[in-house]
Image (cartoon, rainbow, N blue to C red; front, side, top):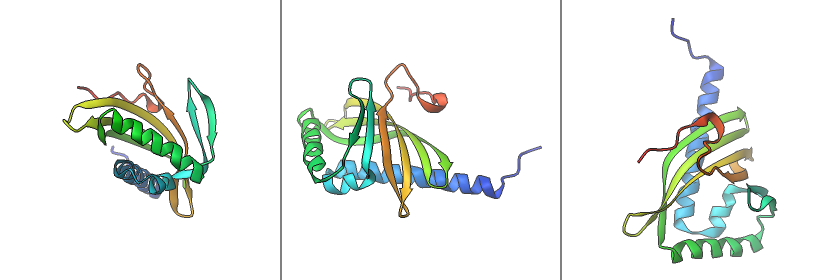
Length: 153
């Protein structure tokens, strides 16, 4: 007998759709390279976690914008023109807390792939808007939360 969707299921599905929509908007802002508006998608402060740098608390203040501009300039120097979403998986953890696992390709002007990135985000709803609280890369061969397969060629 098929499972009947409950009101709780509807709420979870709605939150997960909201998380996916947030992430699509986030990538659109990234592609626009409007750093100040892009950084509005991050909590103040937020946390970046990586193997190389460990846990880093980022103030996300006006000084952070200039550093992020340098990151964008570095991508452009390497030929980047846009990032395209290959896959998104979102999980509602609470009414105002979620996790997003995404696969993105950074693309050059000739449409070739500059690099593939899988990232994991914890996001929190603040004043009705989702904000990235933590960000970390998921490097091959690891799959990250949910063991979601990486996109194929």
